[in-house]
Length: 81
Image 1 (tube, rainbow, N blue to C red):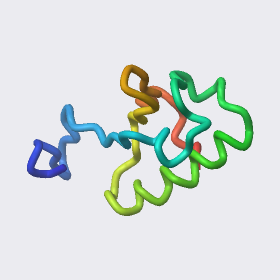
Image 2 (cartoon, one colour):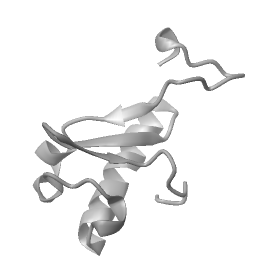
Image 3 (spheres, rainbow, N blue to C red):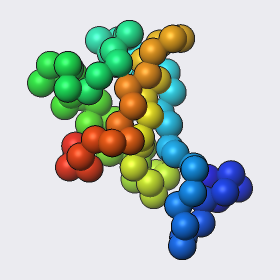
Image 4 (cartoon, helix red, strand yellow):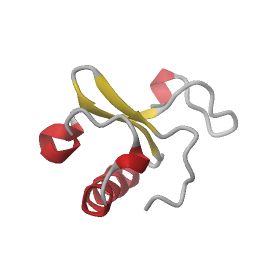
């Protein structure tokens, strides 16, 4: 992420994305809104995002759920997981 412009002092336009989440969690296929997920789907996604966010040291802000669908979390509350 740092190679793409992220700095410690100025976050800039770099956002962490989790692509192909529907391949890991098939129930997410085609989802575009986090608030429309049921409790189990949201819980499974939160767990996956927590793992990957920990790996990256940044919150996941975009979740790819299919070839033409994404859940945009950039303006969502950070207490997801």
